[in-house]
Amino acid sequence: MLVVDYRLSQHCLAGHDFFEGVRAVLIDRDNAPTWSPASLAEIDDALLDGYFAPLGAEDLVLAGGDRARKNG
Image (tube, rainbow, N blue to C red; front, side, top):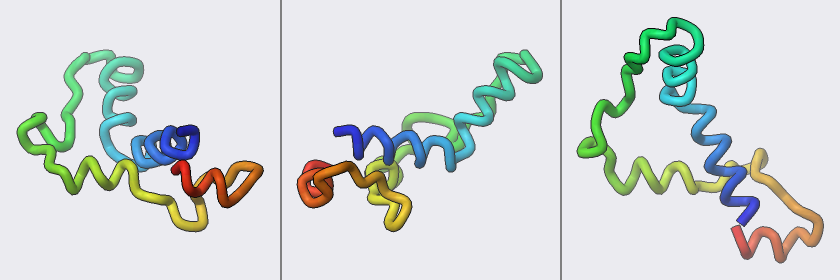
């Protein structure tokens, strides 16, 4: 599960919304983030699947190699 958590964190950091949330709350303090997509209705399965997708050469590899990859 740590591999999946790592993938989620990396995909979130690569996107727009994490930084937009930081901007809205901590930098500008306007509490008015502009999310992308703008609503939950605009989220589809392909977008969600992308957050769980392997990171290729950047994927997390734990000691025990093959076992870690099967669990991720």
